[in-house]
Length: 324
Length: 263
Image (tube, rainbow over the protein chains, first blue to last red):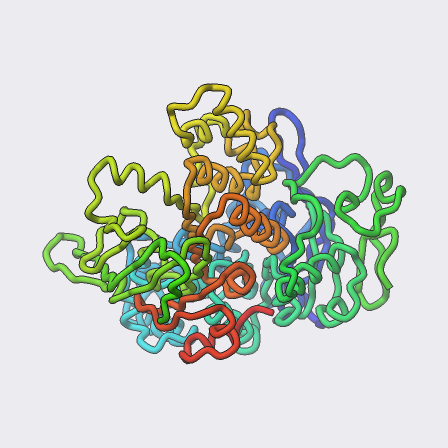
């Protein structure tokens, strides 16, 4: 990872509810390398989805966002957090594309897939109808459709979930962005379609040099496909580093707990959940946010928030007693 | 298919075919789409049958037909030997109390304007006294491991896992015999899935329930199912005991599904 596509520093988001500031995530920093795949892993309520939306500034008006997130790449660098709204318009879809969990919800039900893709193409291609059609067919072929013109003529409700998610991916990449943000794109898909979608992401990196920020709650598949990992819990980054190292030696008890849950699905006694129910991002009273569910928690964990520590190889963790 | 003579068949689906008719925008041309094509299976009392297939394969249409929401073009659905689609109004009401669905999206299944208490009361048999109703509500809540505090909450005040448990409690409150779990835990994260799977198997024992478990995810099916059916493009391509399907699948699609499985 030599060139950076996206550099996020100290990003925090809080939303006012009933007059009280509620922190959604705090002090999130990470780098997305050029044509690399970064996976953000964690349970629901951890602030992953809002992190994605904050990068595109698709958050409610009364939310307070601070920190910086600079996209560089080939064009001029832009800070996504402080740039004016009109500049953001040219970033969304053109420099950053996004795929959501529910493909049907991100499409227009009364337009054919082809029309929607044509609309998302850059103006230079869209100017001529024939070249727009050709490009649409090319893109549909690229994501693995054997009959691209039939897909282009179909309405979203005529396609299956796996096909729709591929069309949604085409919509996201039609504007030729350099960064793709995918928020749980494979959660609603079955094993075969999930595999195909992840293969497609790999090809986007290799052939288009796209950098991908991928949000998922499946640690195992994140470790398989991603270069780098960011483990989040209740709005805090718990651990980050290269996927290979985290797979070998998770430093944070939360990472280990997630790995254990996945393993337990295959065990004869049945799956073992992480103790205690997941609460939505809860109010902090000073201690580590994971202390209540941690099997290694000591008194200090409940009183003092551990500091972010890191070593030379860009491996970081937030724990008083990191695992060996 | 061998029908075990020692066990009672609760639900039987015979040659079920459902076609959806689509018209184009002006209502001129009509075309039909085969949602289900000659699907037959049965469920023993006290068993968990899992149906696996991708989105759009027809899994949910099966659930909808069993629930008497989508009428079949041909075929029969027999519940304890009686044809569901020949039920009169009163019989249908009784049937809908015995068979209850739990859907994927708890937000859409819960009325946002009602508190949890009134949703559960509505599901109970109306003839009960108030004390009896309160007692039962507490019983069902503790069965799904929820605190009594949630009774006075609106759905938006609960977390995803709590909402899904309210849905399950409501399904139990009608004294149901069978639950149709249509992707009921699919969108939750893994730890919560583990939690709910455990809960479901406890409830099954406690209330002697029968489950029809519909999912796209083989990993949870491996945990919960007794028998597994694989659906592709509206056809039931393979059905058998869990171990048979997982250890020696016959259809290429099943083999592919297992191969691409996420762990």
